[in-house]
Image 1 (cartoon, rainbow, N blue to C red):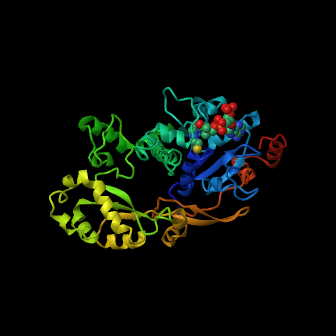
Image 2: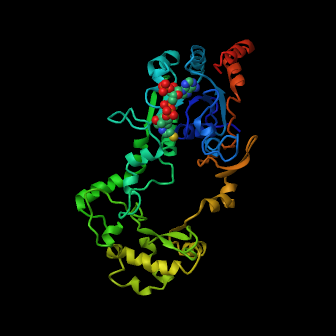
Length: 416
Ligand code: COA
């Protein structure tokens, strides 16, 4: 079956996580992604957090499926020539080097346009233009600079970073959308364009509700769905950390379930959604709250939310998170078990949909990965293993028009 991005050729000059997430997605949609790496070491993540000696790390394999790898020293004149050929024959160049690295290599936007005016040049940088534009940035720096850390955690503790890689993978997702949009516009204009996603911007976009709350705080002085309000604590002048409160209009909290004393994930997220309030009261055996004016309306409940959650918790503590889930779902009460990575890895339904996939790798054997979270009816994803370093150098150079002798000479000169 054909794929959505069949025929799109991508010069993948990415490394670590943010850029590779983006090009992996494009590869899953059918693009031919050619990953250009330095001979010898390649993408630094190949060797980082290794769990199997001499095999590419899971860090690398789980971010580089469905790609081809070529080795190329782009600082040598002959390497630059190969890169020029690649630029002429590809539709998109994706890079996430430190600011200015591509220019220093001699491939400015102007030069790339001379070589291929149809090329889309997509970059991840830590920051957009401004005081920090020259800084190198990793995941947690972006989470801190994008407003996530200051709004995550509890207000009696320090700022927290989240386990979700919103700075890296979140930025890669944004960039992928920019790339396909630029390709779509190219159909009409015939021109490529620059696409930039700054990690700070991507994180802030995902923290949009917190900038909303900053302005609500400035207007009203309090935010009634925050635990600070229910606890009678003072708000400062910036959005506080809200613990496990819901970021939306439906009050929610994480509650203990049976086994919480020894199992760190014996918890459930519980939402006291207004339309099912009556059912909530019935399920936990507090029918009097249905008509009690202190509890009967969402507004009346706001200053009492933490008491309400504590009462519901007395009920959830009597059963496992899955038992609580079964009961609450019967009444349409929104809730979700806190799933450990072990539980997710073993969940049959995620295997069935291709969200968790088992992949075989010649050097490390079988491993699990997260498949394409975007399912398309006419462009199915088959996850294939990540390439070994330089596995496709000869194949790609031959496709680019290089002869056997030329390839041998490049190898001799350690260009590839
Ligand atoms: N051949 C020759 N040189 C190559 C090469 C190749 N195939 N591929 C990369 N290089 C060179 C680059 O040109 C650069 O050289 P220069 O510093 O002389 O200009 C050098 O390798 C190092 O690249 P750099 O991007 O600076 O790597 P780093 O390890 O020092 O920094 C980051 C890593 C991630 C901090 C940095 O790339 C960055 O800030 N990227 C943008 C933000 C980002 O994506 N961060 C998230 C990462 S998950």
